Image (cartoon, rainbow, N blue to C red; front, side):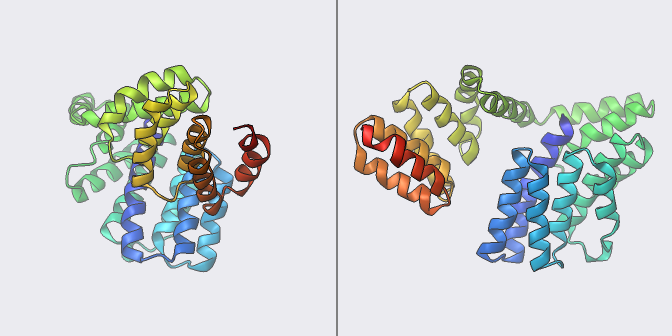
Length: 282
């Protein structure tokens, strides 16, 4: 469990860093963002395809190869993941890319029972880190424990537990799983508590609004959907959900504006279904 959470967290931070550094074109940025979204929905094969499509356009950006390695690691294809990392010239890495490579390697080696190697990669990562990425101490703690280095493992776990946000991050992932599994009540009960911990995380804000929407609590849903729009204006789901609220409130013009916006962002099929099956009813 910790590997998936940590890889996604590091990947999100790295994606923002890479986007600013490399100045991706809109098309290439959409490819890598789509790969991230597909990965988050555990559609690993499609996520890899998007990475490969990016690499066909530009194979010289090491971050995308590392991103692909992260997806394979998350899919528990640790050998494929490590082959990618090992195949990249280490001298070409930026510092943040080296950190990603070390982190992926620590995960891959830990899960293939190469605990000493995993420990060494953790130590190299920690030398480069400014102390903010405490999740690495979870991996090092497990590696130390597996090597019977229990005093060291205890120290590592204590450091990891200082990151209070990790608790809320796990809750956020749990709520998302409940939502995807259609257990909307449990999702809502968690999201309404943790949304305050992530006021600038658009997915948490959106999913909180969506959870309220599922129970027709439209007045409570709207502030979260509006915040999600501010944080990520190019996400079609926000406009689809908010459009339905406007529709149910009898504000058909506002609803249609949101549905059109969603269509512009790629939700053409959703738009057609809504206009055919729902819009005329209101």
